[in-house]
Length: 114
Length: 114
Image (tube, rainbow over all chains, first blue to last red; front, top):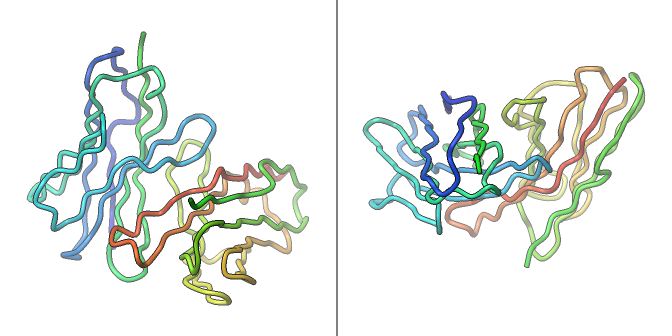
């Protein structure tokens, strides 16, 4: 069975600073994918970034980067130059095994201070 | 481009009443489709997924059911709602041809059972 753990229920960051959201995972599958989604107050889940278990380099998408440490089973999201619009819930998720099922963590609420 | 629609956006229903939530995807063919439920302040729980018309897999036993009458239509139903069915219901799609098989979510339906 797959498990995703997000240990930070809530975090504050000053506008324009960088912030790291933690995510650890557990799976016995050698092939898996790691995802980060943003959920603003409207409720829609917005895909941010993906990291495959065999990818040699850390994924980057604009201001988002994923700090993938396979041996430690961690996939932390780094947001650079935080903006007020980054305030939202952030979910880490993993797909592994047949059927592409996504297992989600409990989420981290990020609040950006002006 | 692909878009995903869900309706209704919000719903208030009495205990014991039936339920029908609809999800449709535009701009793609033969998507994998998913229904998730999110309790307040929690992560997402996968309820059902479908890899084709008439093919439904259930992840969590409950009084909900799902159907896929058309390629790009996914319906979540219940004959008699329970208080515990309250939550935020999200539909998602993915493509097997996408090596990442990223799941993209709809805007969601907020259901309150009274």
